[in-house]
Image (cartoon, rainbow, N blue to C red; front, side):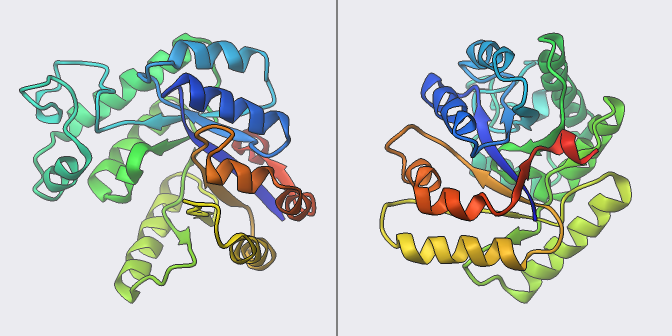
Length: 255
């Protein structure tokens, strides 16, 4: 089966940057999404120049200190002049507080910074999955069309935790809507490895997911260094043996 292994948050710190590159060198990570306003964005761009086989998307941000402009006032905390924090963003999305054109312009600026550094963008996703909400998704689709980007991360999730029927139905409707507008893989898998326990259980879940999924699937990682449980898990010989039975590629190779 075709598998995209994407590392989020590229550019957020030197530790994350190095971890992503190390996992790419090991043949694990095939794709990453870069934060245009991450503190170590420039270093991330330098690393990419030496690794042309690593697919690059953009990790669009709507929370935290990652805004491109201070003019988009509906998006910004008036005290800090940066994005609101995650929980506040969710509340404001639900209340239709954000101006859709400000989301669009902010996302456009983030994409333009990446493009201005000579990178080819393979796909889009959002920090903390804010495009799970339709008002944000519509603006992600809008900027994707503007810049000729074909793929946006699906919000259909493969997980070992049970989902309610309402959650499943919502994510399916979201996925179908997205695919009427642009393209996405059938689902993404969040391994959710937070500690070094339950190795055999997690390995079994990963293998089962890969064997039972139809069509390409994205595995979403958040590398944090060599001692990070997720990095240790995917760097293990057992997991690499499982992955070796599948075709690991990136979004631009799906075009």
